[in-house]
Image (cartoon, rainbow, N blue to C red; front, side):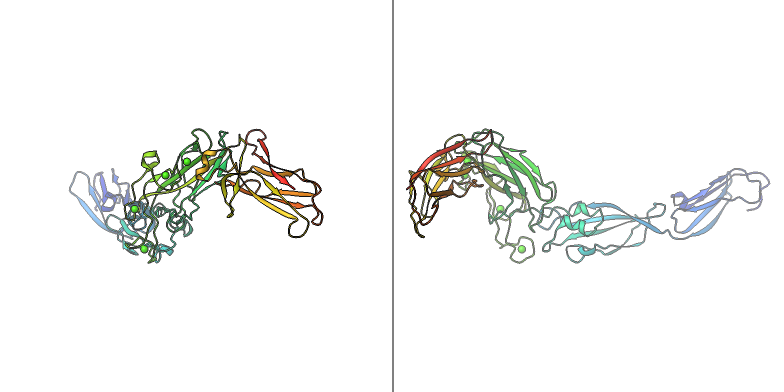
Amino acid sequence: MRRSAAPVTLGFSSSCASVGKATLSPSEINTVTSAAANITYQDKGCGGVDRVSVSISGTSQQKQVDLTVAAPTAQSIEFVSASPDKICLKGSGCSASSVVTFRLKDQFANPVAGRDVTFDLSIFQTSRIFLRHLRKQTSLAWRTSLSLHVRPLRQFVYGPLCRQVRVPQWLCPLCRNAGYQCRFARQSCNCFSRSEFNLDGFNFDGETSAIRVQLNDRFGNPVPDGTSVSFVTEGSAVIPARCVTTDGVCNVNFVSSEFRPANGRVSVVAYAQGEESFDDVNGDNVFNTGETFSDLGEVFVDKNEDGALQLGSGEYVIGDPANGRWDGNTFVRASRVFVLSVSGAQPRFTTVDASGFCTNTPFTGVQLLPRPGVASCRTSAQICVRDANALADALGGNPVPSGSTVTVTTTAKGVSISVDNSPVPNTLSPTVHTIVASLTDCAIALTSPGVIDLSVQMPATSGAGTKYTRPIGTVE
Ligand SMILES: [Ca+2]
Ligand SMILES: [Ca+2]
Ligand SMILES: [Ca+2]
Ligand SMILES: [Ca+2]
């Protein structure tokens, strides 16, 4: 530009500067008294050829120069979105694929278009999760996206694997929800365990039995953290009545209190959202028509322990009747019985049948007759110990509280006497105990006969616990 006779104002602009991909500094020079006007051009991801214009203010005088700017360097990749933001195994109740979008950025945080982006999912790619596109070019919107698919394969653990294989953070929220399954069908599941079966709870409030519930998915792996488990009890209380899992497990307590069923037997059911288990005959990890499955019906508290729902007796909790179809979104459940054992009254003693089971026949006494000689210097008898709750007989009766100790003594001389199965274990049934009388010296007869006393020491739930002693026979 020729030198001007008088000061003028020059304005500078460029295509890239107008969209923020370059700066011109200064963009205007007010007074030009020298032959040249200098400005600084700074690239901010322009790329290609940028036309820089200079014009004299108030005139139509204008000049352009084309500046070749090196293409921007992609410096970072930014996660934009995943839609949907959760993927599941096919048939697990949500989409099995998701479109994940990224933005490629240069050193000035400007989007970079027209570049190939390669995606890699490490071990997921060929086995468990795969990508529809391994390479895509960023679009004019400077974005690229890929489809992420879950392929159900054996032994795939979404959550834990996400952590194990160092999948980028953005993927982890996707890798949840493999469907829940607690293996109730074969009744072999340890989903619902409790620390005490027969609590000293009929006479005392606040006796607790710790409940532990574990939920596994169809691969036997923990369900996602935060899975909610609800409890409904026939009597006493489960505190809290709901818990959420961590590593597939949550814990609550069964606590003795009113209401107490007259027979002391309290059914508790735990339930959670889940799927019906199935026999995966073809090994593809999804349910296929023709595969056998557990067709779950309503969730109910089986108050009378008959294994069936009686709608009229308040057993119903939630859910629909069995429908003959496999359901991927229903309620899995497990139930257990807790016994509120009586410790405030004399236990009952009944006989034991030839198979070793308790009968309801009162124990009327036994004569133990140990005699010198190998065969007979030792003799035994069995007795059934049950709590004072006679109403429980129809259901097999109630045991005394776990932890109760059973002991025998005798006034006979020249003999020792013992009883087994003490302390009373966790059980839902009355306990069978074998009383053994052995001559002190197998070659020497009893010095004198005597009475056998059997004692049941109740647990020290409140104070020392009551000790009940009764004669049950003689050693002669
Ligand atoms: Ca299958
Ligand atoms: Ca069903
Ligand atoms: Ca029932
Ligand atoms: Ca009951």
